[in-house]
Image 1: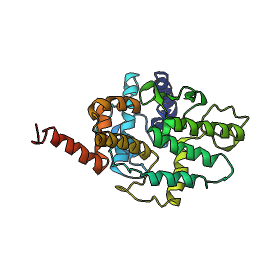
Image 2: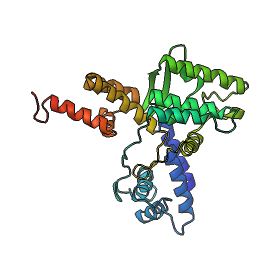
Image 3: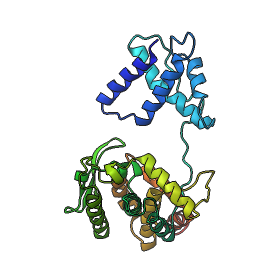
Image 4: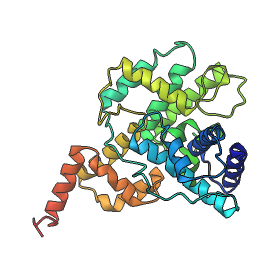
Length: 312
């Protein structure tokens, strides 16, 4: 069985339908290599899928379940196309995801990270200001890190004061308004990048030296260096602060500000949900659990409104 060919054919078909399947593609290619090394692996079975899933580097139940789950749509594709396979059962091992409480950065944390970014190597190169500007953008807009690193120059419309996000998490396109201070910072970065990479033709807004576009792995690695340099090594449920937590911080601060100012949070949450690129408002409400201050504000509002037997 030529598993590599089947996986390539499946991914090509799905991507033509608009699915990016970046991480899923890596998983499936790993499975294809594994299956081709097994004797008599001529059909996709539960036993074969489990053997590969148990190769998860972390060995955690969630990692194993996630790998098994990635194979399920592929197994359905094989069956539909008359290739000998079982349709793998869903939730066969357990949950494939869990939501861990995020780390909420203070203003001091963010300022410290951005200041330390100036010391990244090469000091006189583009990497320090690229990472510094990226952190500032994430903190001030709540963009997903992946959305930010994929920005093209044409997506950052400084004259209009907005950023265009294309094809992210099921949205064909959404528009992110940016504050004057953010416009100023991005304009300065734009000038600096063009000066250091005058011949660049990558089209990427964020670049490193030698016209290399920023990618999420390089961004995460730089953040890891900054985290260690600034002593932000606190672990929450075994996980250290991440770039993605800047998004959580942005949302929590906005919601906390609304509660403290007496604004009608329910009327604003739908707008925030759309701004964040959430398909369901419930995904945005989940942020209420992130910090004690938000929980306290929400509980106080519920009591005031009589939900818990308070004033009516």
